[in-house]
Length: 603
Image (cartoon, rainbow, N blue to C red; front, side, top):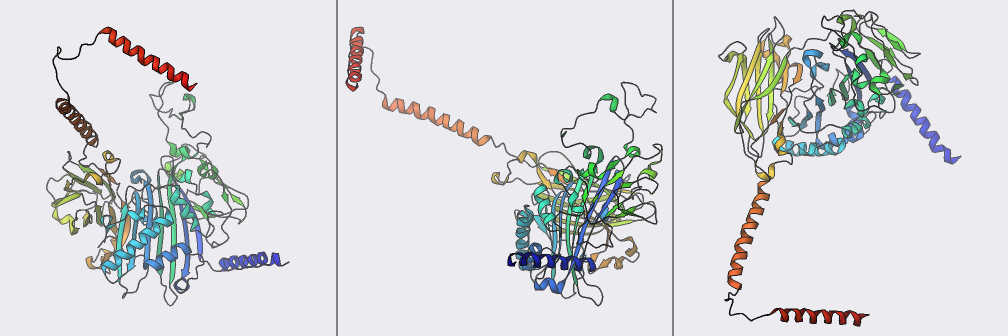
């Protein structure tokens, strides 16, 4: 009987925890599925849990992961934001970014945090502790965020949490654009969840599907929230956003190599006048978008997490209510008042499946098939200009799609130290004008680089007129590295981090001074440009081998010739001993006889 007492106590404790979690909504999770044009599907996973600051300081971790909480306490971190991203968001086709870009990061790994420190040296020590601890926790190369990859933004970022005014907080930002995000980062991410990916929407997070997406980002945000007359709450929010290609995701696992379909199975637009048996114009995939949860993620959803808030529906689908949707038995459906989305209440122990069949009328307008994407506040793209290995330039194209509103934003770049920019060459001009317009740039913060110590930090506050396109350009010079500083793939180039663009809240721009809150601008939208690949002057690393071979050959020839001259004795042909053919044959016979006698003696 005593052997079963521990199991009985464990069961009672689990029931108490589950009942308390059901009554106290400290954790909730939700999956939002939104079909996009061009046969794409946006899947947004959101996990959020709360714990009181008083319990956190006492070490009583409930839904908050203990492994991450101890790191924050040891490093003196008051707010943390971590991003793992791959791919490129196609704003022209997919519209505005999910979460207004607040949960998005540039290619690679981004990390920024507010640390409590009195001096810069103390903040640097805590930053080093934080990056090394997170590197081991998430199996990433965050320990390579050193002084050359760390900056202190002045205008770009603002705290999301509630902090006391007398706290000495310092913001540090680091980025690794060359970091490859893979399954090793997804596994620690799932271990931070209360249900560990064993139940609920987290069961759909499979590495094969996630990293096969056209664009994906994983975000972790930790911030304090202090409601009025209540105890402060420490909130952790984990987000996974990915854009899946429906045709590629529906490919079965037993056929991993994509093969072109036979000609008779190609979806062709027969309404084209040039359609023939040997000519096929592809039909619009938006009109024939159909999928199921098992086809997209490879499996159905396994119930719901027992710790989640029952008032929050775990799965929502954003499609017009005119479309037919089939779900599993026992699922309750709730449609939104705007007739553009529907949410589902799922039984805790049942598997959940969604089937989105093709539209009843293939000739329907695209707005009746998918929800029209929201237009972003700003479009941005960045590229290199110039030629050669010594100098170059950067050009950023910023386009305002609004016909009547001015967009004001902060443009921040973190450049490596070997890109020495010429600040006097920076100019902004409107497309169609040959001369730069000085009224476009409102404020500039520039911190020059120090060789092998820190990178270049550039923050520019700009505004783009309505329905206009602005070109922001500047020139830079490339440094020559030491041969020991080149990576093994030096000819590939060096990754340059994406630029961070913070679009300011237009409602706060009526009074220019009101758009500043505590020295930082109120953000309404975030976006990242693509990362760049900078080609530096690279030496020919085969030359050391060629030099060694050439030097060794020259020394061998010189030394061999000199040695022969010094050691060899030259005599005339008539001065040497006369040796006949008989003497040579006799000597060979004698040696042969001695050899035969030696062999017989051994036997």
